[in-house]
Image 1 (cartoon, rainbow, N blue to C red):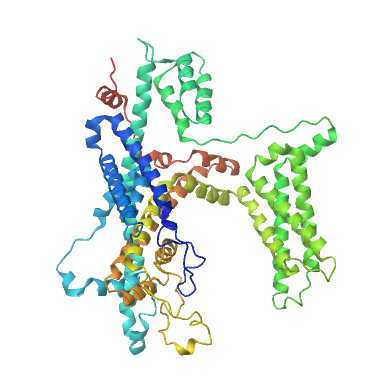
Image 2: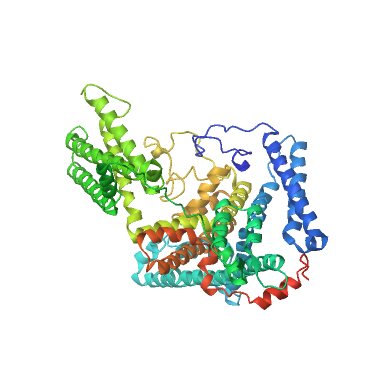
Length: 618
């Protein structure tokens, strides 16, 4: 995060060099002070790890060796910065920082190792045709690679196609074969190799977990009996450091064993609870003495009340769409918002009544224990406040508030449409998609973390290579209509499209530019601009980023999304809507590949335990 405030600072309201003021620069020693605190913590971290694992293990651990080198190099570069009174433009330690993020996540390290082992499998072998058909690297990468991404199609084809329609065959064959066959085949190869190495990594993780569980069983079991006492297990679980809901789940399963002893298989299954997230239990409903309240509670806690509420929300959205279509040809002054206000007021009163009756049926705690109720209730309160504000402000036609009546009505309509998203948990397919997205946040954090590291490294490299390379016109009014006649620029160029805010002048704008290149829409415009302002070899940077981000990482991420969705789809075939949400608590990377993972045998576990350097079993 220091990269946002270090020189060149990103603290300006715009990245456009035509309008950008002089950004705020932190005083010398501010970021350096924060940085040395982090480096001291890292030094204590690797010193503790090195001491605990011993010299022999330390020499085998490449990550710890690089850890020491990274901290040492960062401290040396930090000292050089202070010795130059913070007037150092090239800070090598900025490129080292992503390493600290990687080495503190075991899953990121596994993922990175899988990617590293995947890349050699997809590199094409060179042959004699290379020199014959591709004279130099910048020329061969510029037009054909851009055509491969379809970003300059059909622009690149039009000049030749205008002369002879037969020339289109070359471009159609190239883009059709390259884009729709080779690129998809490359994606399949990358994911197939990565998936294989990921399976190997998950297999090793399962082996280590089973080894740890078996070691605990060997230490705890009774002499002469291949089983563990229940009371001993409960004593150990009371002192173990883990999340409380994991401990409670395991203790609950231990207490269900009636004979007082736990066999090995039952002991191993206890720790399957570690693969599951906490399943939120809803509090009990309030108890009423009145028969009327009991009847209302029974009625409004029924599932069909939610179905009716969804139908009413759909009717509200359809009314809004109908009125907007009828008013689409009218100016704002000609529109009569009276009918829409009356309709919205009726629906909002229904939403308020529905919320109140659900609170009556479930109680406050029970109502708030459902996430869709929180979403629904929050929007209902916002709609009620807005409606009261409209009534209080505009009951007098001459009054005027902070927002016009039309703007407030539009805001109400937007909230009503957003509220219609409440139907997602009640439709099986939509609930499945939503739970898949939640699982991605939980289980693919390591992949997203490496993507952050890659973005960071390329952004810092871009600042080093291209900071200040593109200079904006001298006057701020250059791109205005009145002065466009004074400047001649090529149609579709960086200057004509007004892409000035996309530059490498600071860290934040570098991230935005890299994202724009990653989505490959008009990415050739950026590559062409930096080629004109710097050198032809700048294309190597942009093509490298395209290959890293779009070809490999984005496709790999999409493939993992599909893997996760297919896994949940297969499990949800026989599930109800409520079960779909519940399965979201049990989806981990290990469970996604559970069918392909082989459980280690008892003989393998015992053999490895007796050979373990830190565990001595009699």
